[in-house]
Image (cartoon, helix red, strand yellow):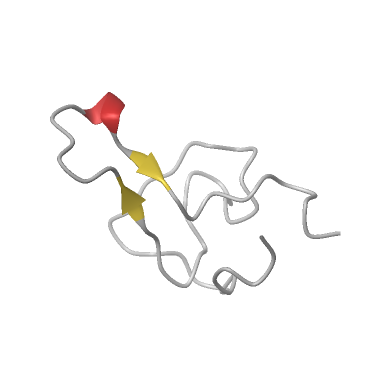
Length: 60
């Protein structure tokens, strides 16, 4: 989904991301303007999901 959020030059302070296949990833940092984590009523880490994720190369 192109245009979900802008990719910015600086990373989000305090957010570590190791998903190196994400468009917003840069050296274990997230460069999305903002992130959205989903799964209302999640009870474990495994039940959560980064809704901001866009695969590398999908915007070309």
